[in-house]
Length: 353
Image 1 (cartoon, helix red, strand yellow):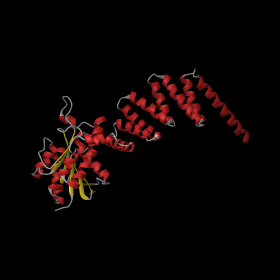
Image 2 (image 1 turned 90 degrees about the vertical axis):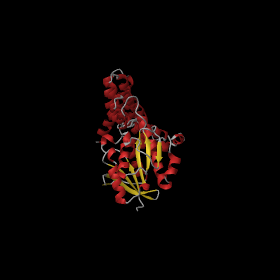
Image 3 (image 1 turned 180 degrees about the horizontal axis):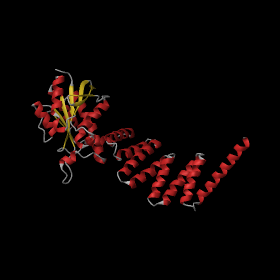
Image 4 (image 1 turned 120 degrees about the vertical axis):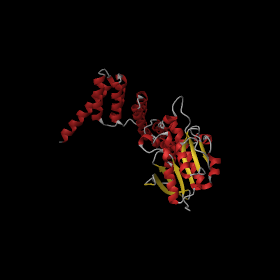
């Protein structure tokens, strides 16, 4: 028999499913691949495969590609091809009946209504193999379970899932090293201990956690905003501004223009050097019927450009500002000052020639 171990994550192929609750099994395999520098570079036996070593064990990570309820055929084919015993098989899957964020690893058992797991049991003719269930909770209100499992993870749900995925990857490593019973003792539960550790985490650890959340769902504005605020704690203001502007763009795409504007204001206070972003923000305020705030943004930009000796750009901004508000005395005085400097400069250059 083979000395390999097979870890099968259940999910559905295709972009419409990749960020859904039904695919958290694949999230765990992605996390294991990331930790151990493995690549899903092979497609065989109806699955995408990554091969390598985890904690000293030869491992195959498999993502069946035939949709959730047809996971059995690829799993059985891989076991037969590599001559792997079912004692070395672990199936990672979502579970409606576990609270969101909870883990439950067991050495055997029924499918509990999970069609992918049921197909594997039917194909293998046994239910005696380890499975790691990832809690996604029951749908709220009258939402159908199918709609719930196929709903993309966002916001706090995404963060909770990301934290669970990290603990699930820890559980897989324990399973490989010490067996199912040890993994049950150490990792089964709702992650209360892990949440307590989070309150003691360093800014660097927080940053890594939010970055992983952003990778799980690039379209969610929550993680980029948290990344920005964490970078600010690390005194990395320019990077923080960049992430806040990313979050602002995502909020705007999602229809939350108020939040987008607030984040842009915060980002540009951190890094006023973003000239185009400042002009764009002024135009947004003007389009919203708030010329006073638009003028304030242009004035801030003009002052910054003047301090950087970028007189021509400052004059262009001041022209726009005075067209918007002709009675802006400080802007008129600064424009006159900068024009005087420009005239003196041009005269000096002419004399030299």
